Image (cartoon, rainbow, N blue to C red; front, side):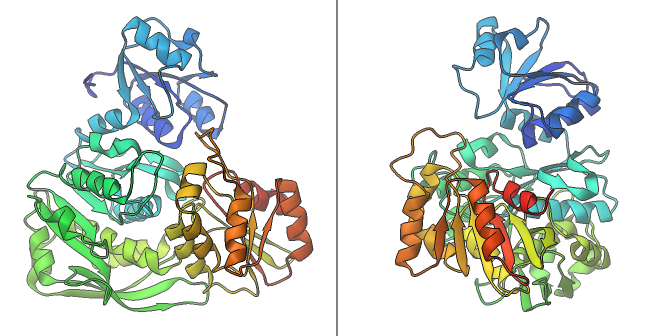
Length: 483
């Protein structure tokens, strides 16, 4: 595999440079003095930013984009051998890396690379940890899978030895990483266009955990079913986190959970003495040893909604303590973090109707979002849901129906195909039929315009309307608000 010396800038070309992760990596290289070129299917705010930073961007992927003198080419999982640009690079014998391989190489340049993994919650947890590290003045380098307001984007290049990134399991891309600290939030059935089943996914996560060195740290959710099967033979330090009473013998717990009138939780965080002492044995630990003399217990209030984010925040507390965070700074940063784009994001209010946008596209995520929404002030809770990929919709159809039935009414858009072309014989009408069998009120409309018209007729002052999905369903809420 081609090795990039980050101390000796060279010319890197990106195929698919406009994606959230690829653009972030390109920005890191630009700030390190590298020459960057790249292509994408269309212009965007991210490609505009890259051009302003000095990158040369091609719109459309063509063989002619590949110029003489390129040292290495980076491409995403969405790029295949029949891509003309990829084919030209292969023909010329250029050195090539996947996005994940480049990210893995970048991690090697930091003393404490931190990878945040899990089927759900990666972006919110990575962002939450980023906010705490920034409040600690730790000056980290950050790669977030969403737009984080405090850094004005999805990437931040710091000057310390701390690097934080999301670690996605899709196509096993995170197996190219070199973490010192890993967080695993959950292990659930997803990406079934790549993984065979849940056991295949569990095997992948186990392999990811095994990447940690002996003096590294795994922070794993104690509520992951049969977690010991995944962690039992690890040589690194392992700490577990979870909600009190929902997992046994957990190192970091949350108890006494209450919610304010907007669904924001307050709870008591407790870190056991034995866990604190274990943190001290991790190489690079910056925690004051005096903190490990007794169990640590303190109140925490979050600026994001939902019980699932209580659990996510416990992993952040563990990682922050390892890196020398004090209780007051951690408390203040967690309460001040109000989320990232498309994660229960308040979009606006029109005619007394509150519009929220959420990225949830898996039954577990939908259930968590709607459970949180139940604590948000509303008369009627309506969800406009855009299923994401035929594979996921077919594999988890009944789970989708069960989760969506928590809303007072579901409004379905067509399935967002993303990378897929085979419909597998299903559509949003298939999901509608399943919802109706459960007795859940459900409407389906083939166009966004029809959905908007329906909402304008049905929604009343005091209602809560959530646009939900990983595609472009957010455009409906923005259109209703005149944005």
